Length: 227
Image 1: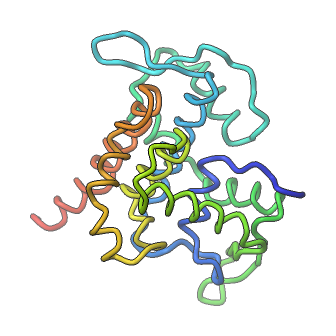
Image 2: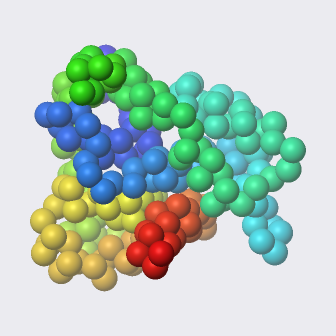
């Protein structure tokens, strides 16, 4: 498949995977980032929106499928929910879906970006790794991130702004760029992550993702260290 279009949740997984081993980098909270990415895709595609309640909740305004199995299942689930939920609730729910890595990776295998390799854990349990097959796609993602973070351009697309925010909060930027380089640009990353350069709908996804990581990752760590 020539030049396939990648969705944000697929780009997140590419950043989270070790190119050669096909396993997720240690310490990457990529699942919640993927959940935030799915919400962002649906917002950007005009399938959902935040309502005008005092405590905004996400509601479906167009249930038309997008043609991506992972996104279409999320959209269907949101459309058939008994009542609208907050963005953070959907980020958690979507990010905690069973076999999420496999489902996203299988689409990337279908698109020719990854390859699937069967193996075993402790010589007993079957597992599948997803090493890189065509590195051009991840290089393009990294190029977009580098331009957004390490220049002062105002010409940054909403999709790239969301990707910066998700990758930052999920600890994925440090898998791609040197720690000192990122430290030197922390103000720029903060400016992008807070949505100062984009629209209200992308800020909704960013804020939901940040809240989800706070609840799902930081709080359990605090509990462990205090017990």
